Length: 408
Image (cartoon, rainbow, N blue to C red):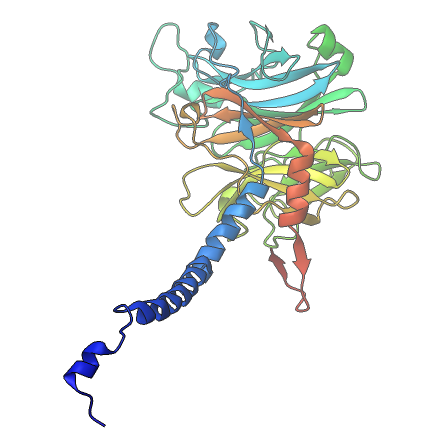
């Protein structure tokens, strides 16, 4: 039936677009809701980033003291060029540092400083507390001057800028004695690890009566950076000598009755880390050596060590937990470096160097003392329990069905 124009005009009309607008609004709302939900769903890449960020927050790193460097080159000739790579012990309420010092003659000597709070070193001696006189290498570098003397030379780099002496001391307090291991440098073909000891009471009295000097590494072997455990294991001295044994679940420890060369390993069983091939383990590619002597905790022996990642040019600090009964077994490994050489004093002379040869626990806090740039001494710290919990949660070493070791 056809409608007339008049009837069309009389037919009531709804407001233009009212019904359609209402329908579109509902559809739009649904569409917008779906789009919003989609935006809230992170992609796999975003999830990984968030998880990594969340994980990194759980992995504590050492915090540098604001006062760093805590020990700088001094006004005395024997330590005027550099002070670095200190050993440390905690005794009678004070932290005692034995540090490597270099003066204008390029000879490494051992200096001493102490602190009550671990950061402010209010006691520092004006003379070295240990020194090796019989060094033939330094004689090769006497210039033609009068009087003839060796010279510290940063351009002709040898070992930390020095031409001989005792380097990089580590110290442990064991049965009332402070045992100090150190590297004896007498040229690149004669680098050996030695030990000397002093009674704890003589240390506190500043009576520097060192006894029982002895070499630990064999003659002809190029060795550095062996460290002692601070207690005997099964009645024997334990010497940590290699971080890298080709198996990331193991390290090398020698058990000896005497601190001399009668039972210590030769180069065959304790190879020079410099001669070892690179292995990709956790965060690093190049494993160097132990840093400070191991620290006993309820969860295992805490061992700090030096390593390099892919760039191969910077010493960084890693952490392991070793089995208390058999410290050759790795229980946990930090999956990231806990200290990296980013501060100015870690790059001032020799860039990219953190060399942490001393560590103590005081009031539940781990204090790590290190050489920065082969020139200064810095300290960094972390709550010991935080570091241990992080290692146990994020650094476990698991044995799979294939009996091969992998890191999580």
